[in-house]
Length: 173
Image (cartoon, rainbow, N blue to C red; front, side):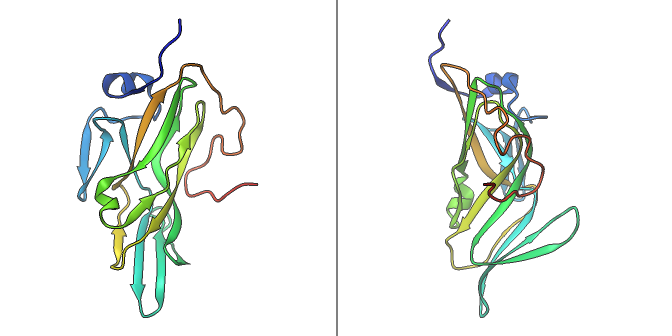
């Protein structure tokens, strides 16, 4: 039986379980939401990210909550990671989108595609376009994932980012 492609949400999304241990409702933390949303699923950021503009220029400080270590990057582009562990079924594709709360403050989350059959922790590419400082705390909602149902199954197989570990992962050649 052929299924027409469509976006799925609500109980259908929970039943498909593209993310381990999904919240069945929306939660709020530090001014942002995470969990099941009206059209998809809001994911959380694992690290603390601070975008700074001062006499020393534009830089970004990323703090790892597990180790307490800080890493400083020049400019306002940085990799971070989602807290959620993805386990994408072969009949779904995920589209990572900005959350309006952050976009209205100048933050872009690059729009990544989560391939059917991909499993692991998602690396997020963040770019800040604002002039004031911006602090993102671990556990805050950072992006929304919309899920589309495919007309034919796909499988990411053993792609280079399959079973990606927790924490930001740079580009692999």
